[in-house]
Length: 118
Image (cartoon, rainbow, N blue to C red; front, side, top):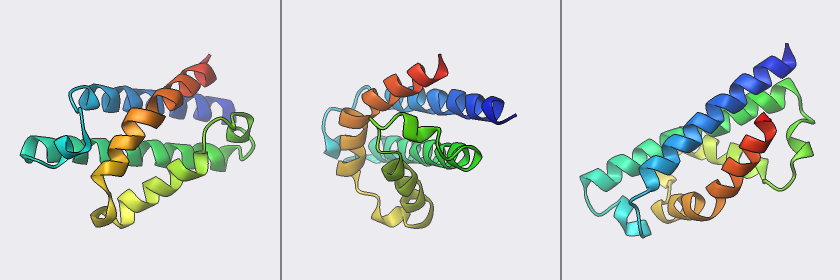
């Protein structure tokens, strides 16, 4: 049962990462996320998906605490902590940090998740 739950959660994470990637495609600089209503909508939707990713990773970690440790190229703890910030302190979400995550960290995470699914 554990492997099935992990696989399903990885699929959901992959879907969320693909959605983030699509929504971020036309964002060229951090301020694009806050200059107008459409940017803020994108920021909000990306933050929600980052929250989903963090929540699903927490579920995977709860199901099998050693599974994520086998893929130490990703700082899983930071992703799970970001989920907590988005969930409980949304007013502290920084658009520049979200931009950095999407631009510099999500490509590696997407690649790792796809590798884990195989």
